[in-house]
Image (cartoon, rainbow, N blue to C red; front, side, top):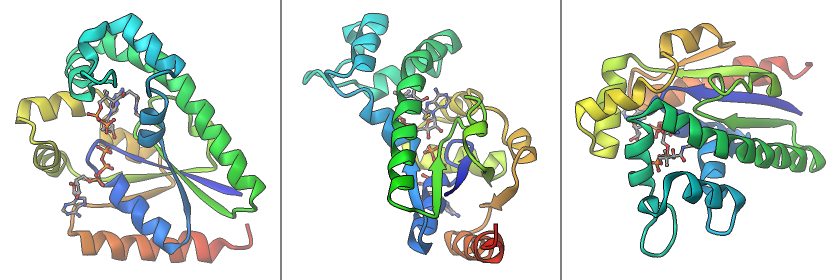
Length: 202
Ligand SMILES: CC(C)(COP(=O)(O)OP(=O)(O)OC[C@H]1O[C@@H](n2cnc3c(N)ncnc32)[C@H](O)[C@@H]1O)[C@@H](O)C(=O)NCCC(=O)NCCS
Ligand SMILES: Nc1ncnc2c1ncn2[C@@H]1O[C@H](COP(=O)(O)OP(=O)(O)OP(=O)(O)O)[C@@H](O)[C@H]1O
């Protein structure tokens, strides 16, 4: 099974790109979804978060208040690293399980979509890295639009990740998402034809 690690900055268009890849036939594993799964009440990571950050980061129903936790960790790198030290090992375990299950089913092509693929040092677990790229003005604009954040908050989130210009240097494939969504769909179809259909002998 070939495993593509799909990454890029926050709001670069990874989820949009992954949806198109899934339509073309790839099996997609989404690290952001795994990050939600590992912090469900009752999970070890949930208990560790409450021990580290207190009950202020909980909703009334006991689930994690993601906006409250996000406000803490995106403003404080030490707190963010603390949260990552709790969640990342659990996310990595679930990702390995999902990949193993896909292998058992005889899947040919899997996409592991992870915003922190490079920062978390897990590029070694995928066969190649694809980066979805946008310039920083576009990134800030789309992030503000999607989350209803101020420019300052959007920039704070972006600066908690490796700069896109550095990420793109580490990629086998750079998917340019500065254009429209239709442009993105066309770029991905072309990439699929070149990188997937064109390399079936691998
Ligand atoms: C901080 C949290 C609670 C915010 O939740 P929220 O629902 O607002 O955002 P969501 O999880 O959908 O993430 C949105 C985007 O934020 C960025 N992001 C998330 N966590 C981080 C982080 N630790 N460092 C830098 N960027 C991050 C990613 O680009 C991600 O796609 C949540 O992101 C979280 O638990 N993060 C820690 C786990 C993690 O590292 N997740 C990334 C996937 S490996
Ligand atoms: N080419 C495009 N033109 C206009 N808007 C776009 C384009 N591509 C994506 N978007 C929008 O930009 C936002 C970010 O895209 P998306 O959610 O796919 O990014 P992401 O990289 O998965 O983000 P995150 O890291 O936060 O999970 C979304 O609101 C999406 O609809």
